[in-house]
Length: 152
Image (cartoon, rainbow, N blue to C red; front, side, top):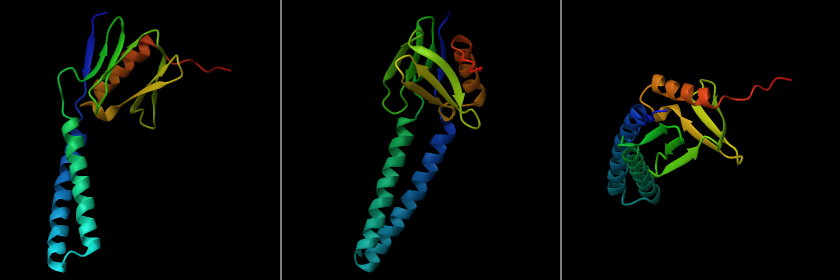
């Protein structure tokens, strides 16, 4: 089996984080202007601090979710390698460690790899650029490790 790579590219999520950070920057500036005009009222300063902290959090998440080389899911003959979205570290799973694979959620936009040890690894659809890429990955994994048929 030749290794297949499915890259993470969360475009919509990054756009939403950027727009949210811009809105929070405006709200922070507004709160700081109010604090200056009202003579540093505690509630206004707290509002400025909270919106500034949220803005920094949004910018951090926007930066960490940028597409990077080798950032995604790789399927090979040895197993599956999943890159962690925020830490950048890689989780390597052999095919023997994966018990089965199933799509979860109302729209089936969450891919769950159930492990033999009882744990699970979740891969969400919003990390990929398109539904087609996510569907292709899910189909390839389900073909290799299908979910059990809970027939009575």
